Length: 172
Image (cartoon, rainbow, N blue to C red; front, side, top):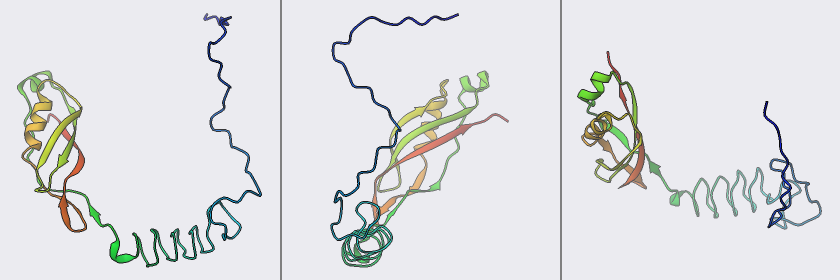
């Protein structure tokens, strides 16, 4: 049976005990956020539904919708400045081959790769996140290097983007 022994040691640098996850008391009467705000949660503006300023729907400034500025919609200074981002989309895939060692050992599973898909839709900078060993990691990398993607875009222009790829190895 385990026993508990209390230490007599005095700490060199005493630290006040703290409790995490304990709700802190709400301070009332303190002006926090927009001074012209209606009563409610901190930083609520005179606009509705969480906005700061006269706008609504979480906006900052005299606007409706997320973002800031005087325009409508998401983004900064109105709809025309909205940042539009798309993720890479796989368009061509090569299935990996089993390594001889992996086949003999009857290993099955998933190799997880962290990659960057460049502006041309090719895979670059490959790092193994989860390994299977026995040559299967190398076979996964070899196959993924042949994959092609429609690249990620930012406001319609191709950009490099990180991606996580899972390569499965299963015996029939």
